Length: 144
View (cartoon, rainbow, N blue to C red):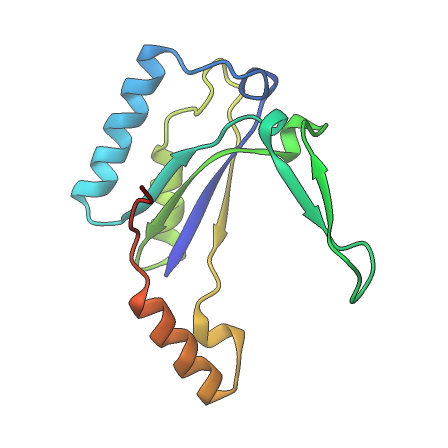
């Protein structure tokens, strides 16, 4: 089962304040520990919402609407994420509890969410087979 640890934004992360070297080193050690345990899938920080783009669908079947950031309510925004693959919800919680305070100063907040797996998305066996085939073919290749 996969879980995403969603790091919530703060005023500092929305202002583009980078972590201290001490916090960067602590997070690097944590990510190395996840990797050594074989549970790390991905871990990334995100730019502030001032450079974000939000796509919304204000009407069913209607045209998508593009809104440029910044967005308000820093606590509702995402500053980064860590994606892990573990055997249980309990194990996911244990790993999340070990994450260093992602912003320091006692301001960090992490939301832990289980990822929906393909079999949970559809009962249609043909659609599921196509989805699983596509996922098996996906590899991360940097664009040049």
